Each structure stands twice: as structure tokens, then as C-alpha cells.
Image (cartoon, rainbow over all chains, first blue to last red; front, side):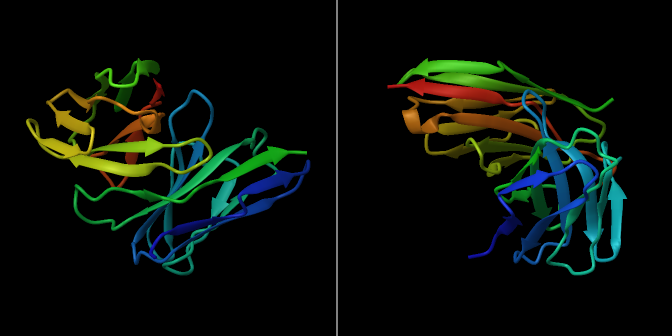
Length: 114
Length: 110
């Protein structure tokens, strides 16, 4: 079945450590996104990519980095510069064309600080 | 400034008690309004896309409608399995970005 796979489901970060969250899709979608979800807040866009080897900052990109070397993969690195990384991270993809095309989501990675 | 506001924040219904969730939006150049369902610990699941005022979509007990300023998600005779958080999102007119509301947490009591 086509879909979006995020791993790991749970992740723990130590002080000063960088961690990488994986996102893989087999939907043949051009666009991929990373969101952060905190209790009581809407999904906030971290980074998005509309095509391989290209990505743009979202509303809260500071302390995060991404790469898009393959169409299927869009990993997110939470760097030590992100001082409040505890959150639920969601990866999404869309066809990237057509105004009425929705995003499809993975089941998230919950990141906590040790 | 683009904004999406959902109300109420939380809603408790008795099984079979119909109600509506609201999503009001201000966005330059709406290119689509989307409803999602999110269960605890899971990613949002796509429900509906609405594109033009007057449009309606239905799926089982859910019906979504759209005006120029807001969208409603009507839930008819809800069941406990409809309990979830319902998210509304709009596609921004200037790019390929989506802007989400904070959601309505629905609890249906047997």
C-alpha cells in the first residue's frame, strides 16, 4: 500500500545532540513537508520541499535542517540549536500541483529530551 | 495576515446528538480548504477538500460545507468512534503551503 513512513515512533535527545527523523513516501509525490505539533497549537510548518534538491524554510525553521536528495525521502535533523525540541513531528506529502490536492501524513515521531 | 480559527476548542456530544464544527478563515487567494481527522498519537487523516463557496461534500455521518469566510463540518447522529480531533487547513494562494487551525476535540459519549 502507498503511504508515508516515519521513523522512529519515539526518539530521545540528550543535551547538545543532533537527532535525525526519517520520512519516506512511496506515493510518487513531488512535495514534502515537516510540521511540528504542540498541545493547543495548530501544526506549524518547519520546512517544505517542492522538488528534489530544493527546499524552503517554513514559519519555524530555526534549529532545524533538512535535505531532499531523493524524491522519496525528506529527513529532518533537529540540531542542538533548537532549545525546545520536545514535540510531535509530522511529515506530509502532496502532489504539488492542483489547488485541491490534499496533504497526506505519516503517523509522526514523538521527540523528548532526556 | 492569513489565519484559520476553529471553534469550539472542545465538544462533548451524546451518541446520536448532531452538531457542527466551525472553521473560519482569512487568506489571500484561497486555493482549497481541507478537513482532517486526527486520532491520539496518529497523523491527520484526510477527509474532504472544498474549493468554491457553496460546495458540499459528504462521507458517512460527516458533511462539509464552504462559504466565502467559513466552513462547517456537520456531524449527524455521531457514534463513539467519531471521537477525534478535527483539523481544518487552507492552502495559501501564493505558494504550495498549507495553514492549519488548532482543531476541535470531539468526544461522543455512549
